[in-house]
Length: 286
Ligand code: NAP
Image (cartoon, rainbow, N blue to C red; front, side):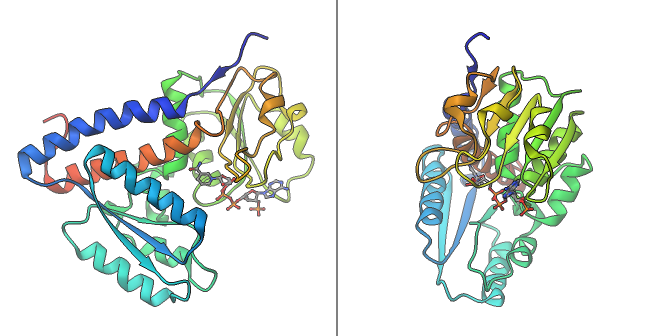
């Protein structure tokens, strides 16, 4: 096989940010205001705190405003819901990010679903998911929407292809499966009860790994010429695929780091700008 193509999410994310800078400037010049993202972090999980910091830094880079809400580890569902409602009612806030995961005593689904649809810039609500799955306008879940944008940027064919998604979480596996299906891929979704997983993955011309286990997908499960999207990210700086070995078989792959991660943040920021444009009545095409 020829050298596989690296789908460079870090580079594309930079290009997206550069375009967003112009859109935010336009908004500011026309309305005197900038879109604002509210981030909510519940508890003190260091990885979650890092993700929220990275998202706020990205806001700064493109000129967005942000407000950070930090709630203690012991927060109960009702307190979080009240906080989300206050942000829903705040006309200066255009997007709300509730960092996943929340502590075990909090009903995360209830909290996600309390986010107003027009402020659901991370694409986590049941209604947003349903609309997206039905092909209606909605903000996509940030990680899968970022993956789709990356695949499109590199003109990876999707229609008619056999896609295998490993993982069925509400923020990743399920929405990426729906997005691929909407684009006419033939999609198989695998999970912890899937039998003969290796054989199923071998069917995939496009493989999306969203398992949450370091290097779980082995190179000999990857068919020759497959496109490998590795959504995983672990402290040991590897993903969910044994990428070093799998690259030899793939036609294209997302590097870890520098593939899916930066696209997630760029998508969140882009959707916040869109929400701001809609709320402030200015679009980039005006
Ligand atoms: P999750 O909620 O833990 O879901 C993991 C999924 O993998 C579940 O559906 C689970 O199946 C399935 N699974 C677990 N063990 C399996 C096995 N042995 N065989 C087959 N399937 C198995 O994880 P997530 O939130 O979707 O995240 C997945 C990965 O993406 C993680 O590595 C996470 O760090 C990464 N991630 C990256 C970003 C980013 O911005 N780069 C964002 C979010 C997540 P069941 O449903 O049967 O339990």
